[in-house]
Image 1 (cartoon, rainbow, N blue to C red):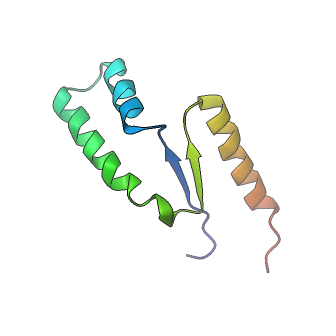
Image 2: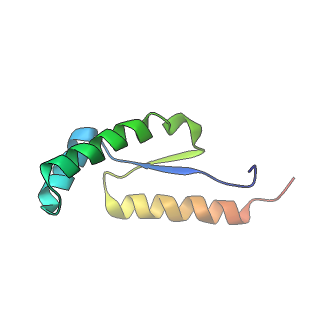
Length: 78
């Protein structure tokens, strides 16, 4: 689908992702392990996306996302 703009929101690192998941205290160790394995697989596809946002600061990541969306709406079709 050529009209689609793909955006990958990436954690700063897998270690940070793991710390975030553990600090939420909502999932068991097994669930966290599965989620981290899934994240590793998903991250391996990052080069397939048009944009990458590193979610190291939520507010900045939200602004980056809004900027990408805004730019997409302003783009002139060729």
